[in-house]
Image (tube, rainbow, N blue to C red; front, side, top):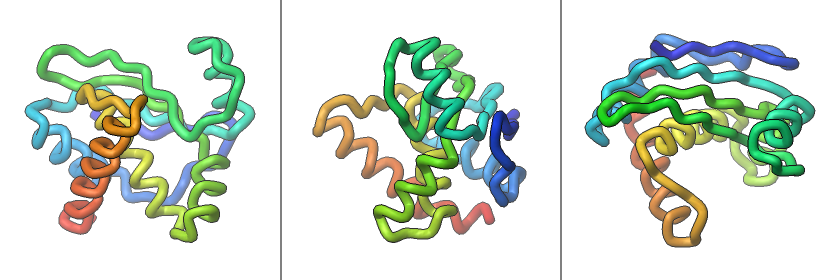
Length: 140
């Protein structure tokens, strides 16, 4: 089950059931079933608090993924700063919703085991995000 909640911000406009079907389809392409995934949409202030408290990082970020997955089922809590998603979209010159979908699936890819710490793994992550975004229209 995929849930969407807010913490210190407003819920973005998205079709939750369509997004859930898309997330499940993407997870299946990597051989995973989908367990409980909770997206927590928040502000920059809140994500900084989470980053400091749990990761001992003192900086803003667009996403923090807490992975509770098992061998075949992805589960986790995914914090997304809508403030940072907004600023990233503006910087990239793309619509907010497009950047939001990319970040939503970025968290799912982390749950499937995809990293992004090196230039090589980041390039692989981006290619996988692009592939997932390419099938999104099928689920809208």
